[in-house]
Image (cartoon, rainbow, N blue to C red; front, side, top):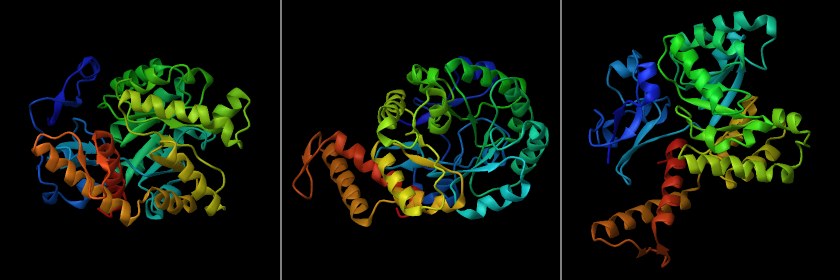
Length: 353
């Protein structure tokens, strides 16, 4: 079944749309070979807007056609590089450092007296073209409204909302977007408060949420935890992953690490986080981008095996069989196919499939 645009309660309030499923197909080519690399590899959200790419009818950035599953799917960024929102020079250079996404940070990276100037710098940055996703981390509380009023009309690819406690905080953001005259934007709530841990599924299921991000530094301060202990974080990390899965959103963004001058350690940590179910990672320094991408790139053997599994499963489905024996003799069922599709997603994100 192909996705189409429909309205829901929030869409009606904001006079916009979201991605759902039904009979009406999107006006995009079903053959992925007819789409450009930009359509396939560069991200963004599906939203009704006056953005040039949407007016032209192109595939919204970040969506790719999954021929195996006969549906459009979002190709999420692998790496998110935080950059101070008041540093025009750093924002201009960040795109060339190799991240899939750049986050202009209006919160922690900007002194309270510099917030207004940072909004102008970030809005100017968003006004230009970019080959990568551009997100903005706004402030929490009353300052958030001023941030949104300035940057939302410039159509960033999404908003990072810090210090989220419950889904009500996301509703407040939606109202601010409405007041700014902006379309609804994808939201990444930062899980960095104690209260959020008791509302994870509610937050992950809120309208507009694309994925969660775990903010361990702030959360450790809130809970008085030792942030250097991996065992301390295991249950919390798994809860965030489980809530994302239950809500049907993209796998969460793994937390930042201050270890930007220890690439081997950072790579090992990133692989551990991916093994727990995280789907990408945030970075605070360009040196962390390469290890993130290395951790998220499947090797050739895995890609070949995944492609074969999907091909065998497709053939079996055409003949009405739900379970079939694979090329290596192992049984292939839907769970195995889902794992294979995740590998192929990772390969597409890495540009090797």
